[in-house]
Length: 255
Length: 255
DNA sequence: TAGATTGTTAATCGATTAACAATC
DNA sequence: TAGATTGTTAATCGATTAACAATC
Image (tube, rainbow over the protein chains, first blue to last red):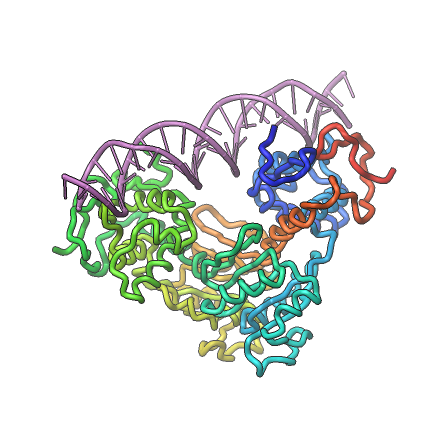
């Protein structure tokens, strides 16, 4: 049947697609809002609209979890909240450590939505000795020297890195050595980790650049055919023939 | 040939895949680091390692931009930095407005990497009258009442939303009305925007939940076959037959 | 029963990857 | 020329979507 990527009992070779996993939190959020309004049931169409996806995708996503709906009726909100929470592992407590308590680290520590769903800021860690003991969001900052002990003592398996880029890999290595197996990286660096450790990154700069790419296209919508270089490009070290994106035309470059 | 999704001159029906666009900033970052170390050329293999992708993917990505490498030699670092920058639209100036100057908004305003690549924090906007005039990261906060004028005066086309979730949609609507066509949303809300407006979201909570999902799987690696529910799930409003993920087995639920 | 809505199928689309001919 | 490395092809994989039979 399914090729068991992990060495799990074959009975459980479920394998929910990554794209689906990434959407479950969206569904959960929409469902939680409905739950707070005491809405008892919801159709795939309604829920999909609330989550900002199309309903076929939502139903397909849910089909990986099981058959939790009722034909002709829809989905029971409370029941689905529970099932998705359980699937995501939110019925348990996840102590999180934040390393690097600068502006961003402090902002995240103060971020309310953190605690809401199973996550708990268990420790704040910083390399600056002057910060040690200072309370941030009601939690005393601890020094990096004690990182290993802090992680163990609190049973932290998820670490958040908000250090400057130069320190990120080293912090990452120490977190992993201490037993952390999931890392959320806010530093603009590619982290290398051993197999079995998950890294996700959040990168403001990358997001802006992606937006700028599309923004540029929009601006050019009613502009001339090809954007003539607004600045002189640097010369190539290797003088060689080269083709621009349009195929045979020589690239627009000063000789 | 290519189905022109946008109404552009057919000559320019290029269409770089989204997945490629999302990786260009990564390549650019790696190339910039090489440039700073004065490395003249780099092979796809080396650059791919630095960017954390595989080299076939990198070469395919670059092939959408044009033929910018030299067989047997590699890529000229400076030349490629320029080409990717241009492709991403970073050779121009992008004034950005941040709306919602709380912990996170202030942290972003202070974030250095912002200015580095074409982006410039042109305005900070907040709904709290008490904040008006207060300098954050050297920029005076302005009041929401003037949002429309601020956007126009500064030629802002990219807006960053760091308000509480309840205010996000309203702020979004106002930004769009004022002419903003790209939005980076840090509020945990689904924003609805008219066609032609791009929204990207950054969501700490979602990232953590995705990590928790995988973390849970890791923990269960050598655990019993199926995770028995640690808590009692809520009853379904609709009493109906239902199937768990394993197919025919009735779901594990208290009667 | 008639109407509504799920769960699933199958077609399509887009992204990844290995392999290798082209060519510096 | 021999060695290195790109740019491209083609196979594969995963994700999306419309459509509809199953069924409440």
